[in-house]
Amino acid sequence: MRHKINVEVVEDGFKAFFKKTHERARALDRGEKIPSETTVYFESAADMFRMLTTQRVRLMQELRETGPVSITILADSLGRNKRAVSRDVSSMREAGVLKTEYAANAGHGRRLIVKPIAKRVELKTYL
Image 1 (spheres, rainbow, N blue to C red):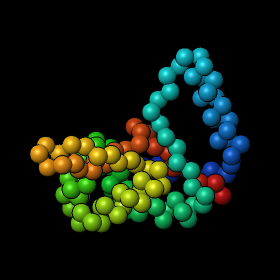
Image 2 (image 1 turned 90 degrees about the vertical axis):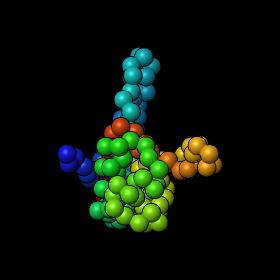
Image 3 (image 1 turned 180 degrees about the horizontal axis):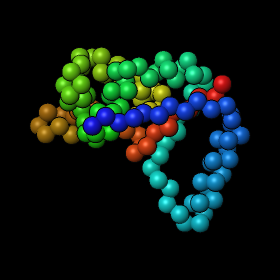
């Protein structure tokens, strides 16, 4: 099953960002549950599109379907070189699009696990 990834480029700037943040703070004050959602902001559309290569979009889709996995398993399922996937994961972690953590690897030390940062991720840039 293919999933759509929506990219929204808006021009409302930090005013809208702070308004949304304020609304969420009020919802938390009322005891409402905030869904697991993350918005990643880029300084320019060029930065966002440079980060969103075809292979990185595939990587995000795979994580959404499989859940947290090691880089080795992710590379195998994508049919890609482990080193290339590792570079993409590192860049995407720095951009705030996903996260990594170490987990025990039974009898073999630790392994790096790649996780989505939230169930839903919005990528926005302001022109």
